[in-house]
Image (cartoon, rainbow, N blue to C red; front, side, top):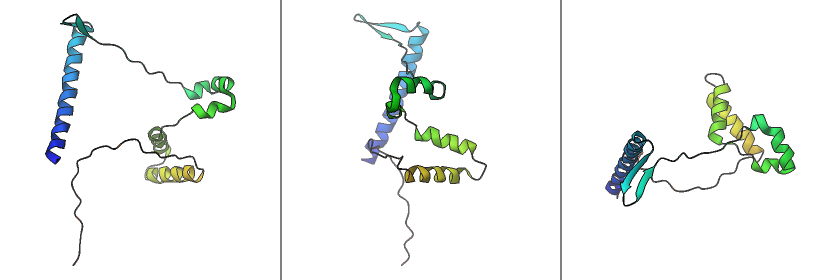
Length: 130
């Protein structure tokens, strides 16, 4: 099973590399590459819209009223990065722990399972004394 899993990882990387090579080739052809049979590979721009909360808080409040908070989400990784950036050297982990404890105490944290991720790792040796 471990060998199959390792092969899956190699295949995923190979597929990613192939996609990047195809993307580069299509880009050199101006973003469109006919492949025959009336089909073509096309580079399309995918967009993701984000809202700058700090610049637009009043607009959001005006249009949403009290339900405004239902739409606001904070990414934990972004939040913890900002806390670490502000904390003095040697205090970064303590600042993060303090914030997470305060958020937990306030009932502000919700943890829900997303999906299982397969991970291949070495089994840690246990120190058993007889």
